Image 1 (cartoon, rainbow, N blue to C red):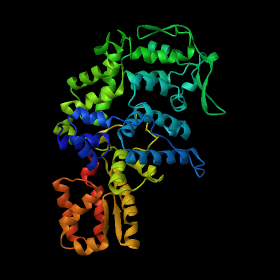
Image 2: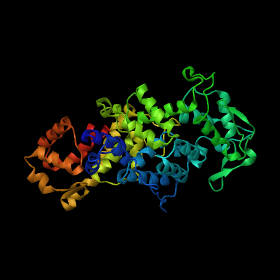
Image 3: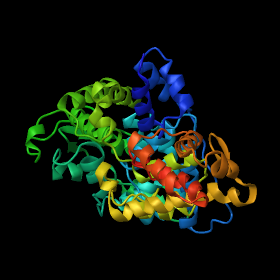
Image 4: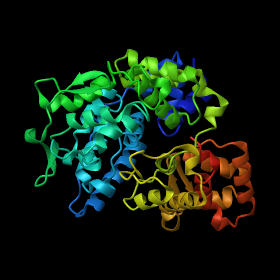
Length: 458
């Protein structure tokens, strides 16, 4: 049977927090793999949302969707579905800063939410012709008489193969295969323009493409080659991979990204090989790949357990779960100040991970958002003489009378109501505050708990 400590760690990395009821449920299972399978059992359709009449701009609509998505991360019974969609949002990147179409961004993120645990090949092909990606990487302008190589290049360099595992000739061949996929400027929907397509046969990663009768699928052929029979060219700049199968190179590239996102440490060759083999042998199915990562003993080492700073969205969701507060559309600006506004990755490389989130400005913004959550929780303190938290309520009388001289019990009660477990050092610091704070300041323990290091380490 898995240990409670390992299950708590597993849940923090996959479901944002280790809710007590989920810990009890998974600890009772016969094996770690059974717990992982439970976590990866998600609904086929997670649902979506519609924009309100009040949202009259693309920015306002994007903020509404962002708040909805944050809410789903906090409230979904199987949050790994949302956690994986966040991973793909930072990997197969589009940004509403350029797309300027909230409906298209909703369509893209909803794709990641529905199929983020499906198959890499299917997901990559589907996102390639969505309006958000066509607009973001300019492929909607790619035509036989005027090539735009942006999407074809990033598809190889960042999305699937990694730097140096292809040549400029491969970029040109891939961009030809992707010609003709465009956008109807009137309806802002996908439009296939056959007269824009370059249907001549090309050599791509050692294989012939553009040979199929359905020209709309020529672009998808590039993905099939990369994840299939392609070979890294002998003149590629990454000399170590020359002549290697591109599906192995792609699986290693994706595995390094997944490990960085969920583990936060530098993976060993053994780890990457195991993850690569799981991905390739399953035909690029995502669940076996994620299972391979989460099953590795290296995932449960002390270094990994204490080695990942929560990204801003992760930290916000953990705070929401601890306080029971629902997100406001205005939070996107706090998340922007923290460095991670939903629907707005900084560039095509996506967000960086781990220590990148630690700087003075970002931590100040985290404190500001914690203050907003605390204000919502405390709003009933003046009117009803109590605060409501996920584990129940605590009254003014309890805070000021019952626990007046029992400060450690008050701190523990607050943690229990917020359903969090803190390290001894954090508890000592909170006890110190409770010992000296005036009675009217004691409710601020809620905010201080949100600001403990424990809440910012996944």
